[in-house]
Image 1: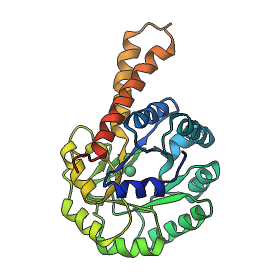
Image 2: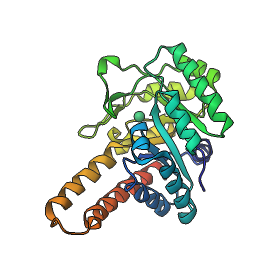
Image 3: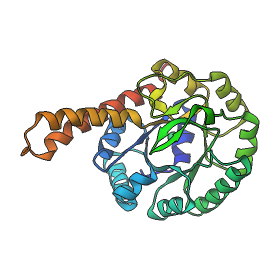
Image 4: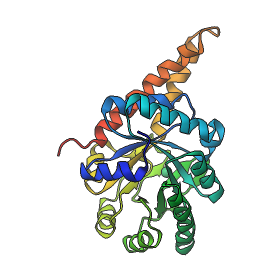
Length: 282
Ligand SMILES: [Zn+2]
């Protein structure tokens, strides 16, 4: 079924697992993510940046997610990732996205609350879920760079006030992860995550999931992470395989011969990640 973020995260909470949220960068990559979730028998969150949504077309993305959710029997959420502009959020909701993230993390605290409230009020009318962020995730995403000087962790007391004031469905936390990190791994502040988990009652979201060590996945899930974002690993997997194929194949081969091996690479990454996110050892 085509579902909301709130629904899948509440199921995940009952099973002490996380749901994989995978960034697709084009329409071609999307089916491989949903097929991976179907094989692993879990729900899946498809995420797009505003850039990808405008490039592919919001309604095209909604249509593919809905038709594949039905055909493959998978619970699929379509989520707008890191939107800072209400106009972009409105566009996605009106086109049929079932979840959005308002990212006011670079704003002063009160401005972040006000911006998030505006989005929650609008989204509620359409039954759409809202994720928001407090604190800053480092690194680079969609061309936006956050330097280490600008990074600050989510404060648990602020988190309580923020969640109460906004009524969000999920909270993205800053606990040391970085966007775009794939050559090295993150040192996560588990202590900070535990304080946040004890303070608030909403499902927590980790960004920059590619940089999280495999052995840390279980630990963060046990501390309340319910949505696990993975973007860079898919991008790197696709680009590497794509370079190999385009380099090796003749110019007049079917384009499928270059694209299908990339889809297999994506599906393999998605399945491996989902196996970790299921948190099976408990
Ligand atoms: Zn992010």
